[in-house]
Length: 189
Image (cartoon, rainbow, N blue to C red; front, side, top):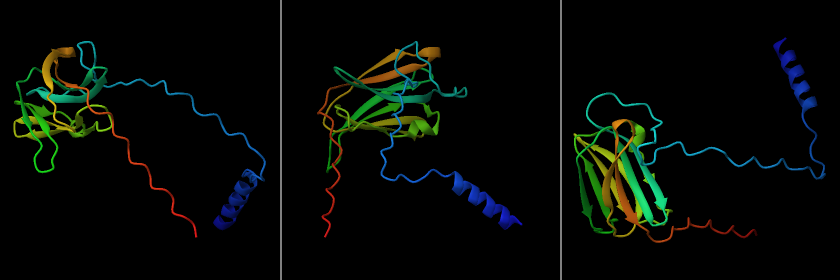
C-alpha cells in the first residue's frame, strides 16, 4: 500500500514538472535588487554601539577588532570594555617572515572566540596584511602582520558605555594585490 501511494505521488510530481526548454528563448529572471543592508559592526567613536552581547563583569575584555581604509591610509582598531595599559613592539622581517607590530593589552581577556578570528587585509592598499588576537596568560597579544615595513601611530579614544578604543593609524601602502588569475583551460584533443 505504501508503494502504491509513493508511485502515485511520484506520478503527480512528474505531471506537474515544467516542460523542458525546446530551444525557445526564455526570459531570465531579473537580478536581485542591490542590497540595502548596512554595516552593523563597530567603528571608533563614542556614539557607536557594539552589536555583540555585553561581557561579564571582571577584568577588561577585548570586545571588537576592526579595520578601516581612509583616503590618507588605514586604521586598525580594538575596543575594550575599559581603559587598558598597552605596549607596542615591532619586529623586523627575518628569514623570509613578514615584519610585525605586536600590541599587548595588559591584564585583558578576549571576550568571545569570534574576537580571535584573523582579519585578512592583504587585498587593500595598506601595509597591513592581517591581524590576529591571542590570549597570553593575563594579557592579549594583537599581532599585526605587515606587507612592508611601516609603523602604526597609536592613540586611544573613548567609546560608548565606558569602553575604550585603541587605534593604530597606518600610511597608505602599495596597491592591493590582485588575486591570481585562474589557469587557462586545457586544450581538448
